[in-house]
Image (cartoon, rainbow, N blue to C red; front, top):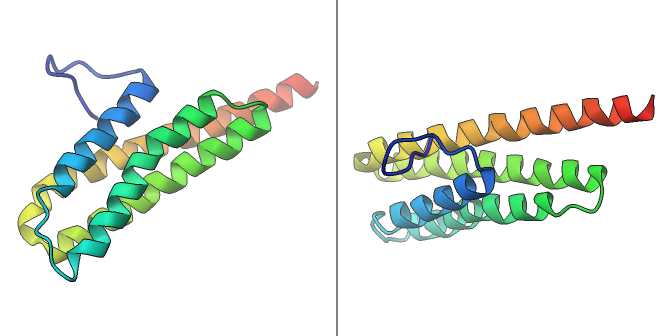
Length: 129
């Protein structure tokens, strides 16, 4: 869970995903650049920062179906981010503790997105009756 300087949980998902992207950018700057890590850095930053961008799109979705689709993309990007973090941890073991914190937040975001998708689908079913 990303926390503010006062250690309060962030319940605003737009803010939380933006902070995650910012933390990902800061972390990427710590990764030594070489032939192995450069592609990983690029992929990692793209997936980590697109979580928030896709959440903003979901928040402005034109229909519930569109919302579910965009939340699914958020979930996929969070999962991809976890993958790249795993690869970075393998390439740069000394960054393992940083990776663990970011992987935990990516996992929490995935669980949030999956819950939102599930609840939205349930509510669509209720609307039909």
